[in-house]
Length: 341
Image (cartoon, rainbow, N blue to C red):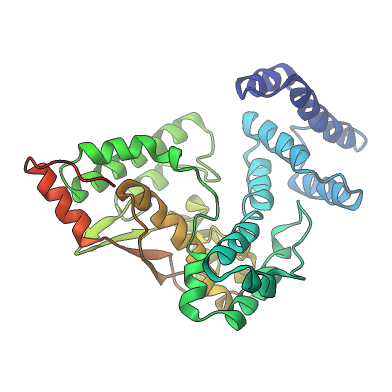
């Protein structure tokens, strides 16, 4: 174990001394488990990690702190295959709870109870193939309780709970932009530069391995992540979850699988059972509209135009821009006072 490097990394995260020691112990426990089979943290296979996590679940030791400690270590040491797996088993699980909270706010606690009481969520650390059945049951319950438009509204929230402060610099760039077109073009340029840096460093960009081919693919499509203004809508698309494999893959099903980001549903693509989960893509739509909502300071409407869960080749969205906001923008640029957002 690269203990000292990990210790320095954890201290930079301003973790308490006992938290640092607990995190190191979590990695060492896995290392000891591997050593019994003649392996170490560098030679272990992904199957070994999955088996170890299964044993943690069986023993009730699958705490979030323990799993996060291991995930952070493998990010630091560039075990990208291990880190990606942790992202898969940890990244989406809190979405269920967030959907429940939004349902309670929009439709009332009674409706929330009708949908979520008795819904069995897989244990923390469960493999991704355990989640589509739970997601399907959730959608069925939502559909039996709400109208289709209400279901979409509940799903299209900030369910990854990204703090608005995360977009503070983006808001500043918007305030300096002369138009939405200029702003979106600038954000696209920043994204490409960010991907180039990830490619050079050899680190994952979120869960994605970035190659020269991925950089060029994104460079050629401004709709990816940031969007293009068409009329009063910003047209957006998602970068594939595994963009390098997606670019090289020829099989339509596997391309859809490599495109899908949703850890609560994507495994259903492999079993030809994803289409009934298509409405769940409004959760992704909520993620896509969030930056623009923060920038403009108002709630926005979003539509899923195409999704891989529903059988499409990629995931595309249309975020409707309020005309009054764009008009106010033009007035301010002509010398008028900046409107409150």
